[in-house]
Length: 77
Image (cartoon, rainbow, N blue to C red; front, side, top):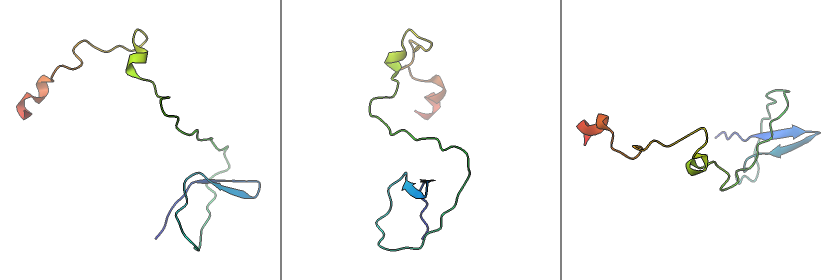
């Protein structure tokens, strides 16, 4: 079975960016994909996403009929 895990190789050290499966001993193959600068992945912070209510009065708005049933789906109900 093959398992792919993202990681970063830097200054002779390999740092995994994902959890490693619980394996006692295994052969590995390391592939260097590119030499471009690595984008740092920021960990997800709960509550950091924009909520629709936070955008009210700004560029986005919620139409008054947002929760109304769609007439296009009447044949399926």
